Image (cartoon, rainbow, N blue to C red):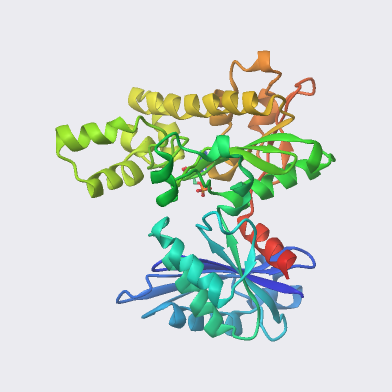
Length: 406
Ligand code: AMP
């Protein structure tokens, strides 16, 4: 099999990437959005190094179209036209499989799975746990199956990597019958990223995955941290939904559940209001009015005390989780930072690790400031714990897992 198409579908958009699995090189990437609206948009990009040199002079890298796209099936037709018009041609790079990102696999899916009718029924049924995501993921799968009826489709679940959590880590301390009836437990998310980064970290260190205890900090717009023992996730910060845990761009992360009861009783907020408050209007946006870490840091650097205080809450929470997971693991060999903030903010990394020297964590200021798109070490040579920056690549991980199940 030479190429895998990776699809990440939302309710009114989908992103795709075509990956050559011999070289693991991305051949094309794109986005189809505003599906179902009066005018839709598609963007198709071919990376420069994937364009044969003889074609480079007249090969546009990015092409955009504005046109009505009534549904996902039409969206896939627009994508196919982009491949035919701008390349790479899918007849010259025949698709081996399509890999789909699916957010919630419940406790049923602990690894990537070939899509069958039964798997689709299960994904639909799990919409109860991820009402915004699973139905949209399923729409993408069905439209892609219409576009590519003859190739296998594989579902890769965000929750699957965390299915190795022990009961002590995944159970909520509430009425056991109620928890069982409503399937209330910690599932964890960003699994493809945590898996990818922990494997890349082991490769970078030339050490077997099986002998490493790792902490992975995925700090993007959404943020989560995991403790990984010998390649198996044993703790993670996101829970039943991606709301629990770290402070995020617009999500609160951990808080006393009584806050909800209090706001309902005292401020008359409905459950929909509370959902919007905690998922969309909290985090650094709620605290400081900006949801983007770059903006927050700029304001803080310019002397804005509210922004500085929000930055402190954000990094204080990360440090707390590092301490927690060091205790759970007993020994930590490597801490990796990844995703938008983790890969690009030396300030967040320095603040989150400050004062942890007694635990064997020593950051090199110089290495921490270096910019690169490659995995790199940012701890000092005498640090007992290796601290790394490892760029994540969820699409490549989905493609690898797709290939692995076939
Ligand atoms: P992601 O969800 O992984 O795309 O990450 C998005 C987050 O990364 C946003 O909050 C961005 O502000 C943040 N980010 C991207 N570049 C930087 C940077 N140079 N410094 C700080 N934050 C950054």
